[in-house]
Image (tube, rainbow, N blue to C red):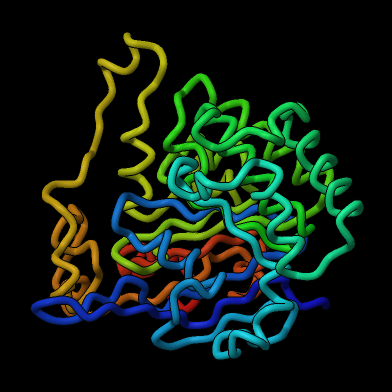
Length: 337
């Protein structure tokens, strides 16, 4: 069996802040296969962006390992990391601040090619024009500057800059959340088309479950720095088992006003715990209506739902999905129950 393109083992990222240490990401395990789109969802502050930045080594992990094509890149030096940076590219959330306003579109897209020494001037011009056309922009924009473009056009430039190197893995951090709703669908459809044409894998970070349903093959749900549920898109977004996943699904409005008004929505009470002093047991226990004494005192493990497959197969997209919940385990629905 070929190794996954991206393998994350027990990744943790902590930050020192006044008053203590924030464990932004806690023992995260993920795998992304070739040509797969994995959605990482959760509310603001759950640790999604921190995972993405750690994968591209914009943030140094506190512990754990990150491997690309079976090669551990977690502690590589800047020089040793350079070949792998070509394989891992990132599209940032804000198309306004992620582009240098003093560089033209052509310079922005050609800059990664120059950094990695790809081709001569004429070849770079050709590659830039090809990718600009693929992201749905005309050649007329090549001489423009970011300040002369709309948000949707800027995000297309950011996408072109990331894809001009033909990366194996694209980390997309909320790439449409800063755009008008009328523009979002065009960018999402473009990303789907490009992924099918170019075959790259993608870690797609979003708080929008509708976007995840439209794009992703599998979905991982994060809460307070850890994954609480992961599985195939339809398993998580239609038949989610974890109480937090269910609350996210119930928060999504239904387009029919009559149905929406009559819905019973089991929203979680209160706010997420203080990350400086997280709960000893389950991170959701202070808010979960199902929590009992065990939930408050014992931290649950991420375990595969019963249906005959192993945990590793579930991680890499098997029929099972995985849930972190004592109550579901006690019901006999998890492996090891």
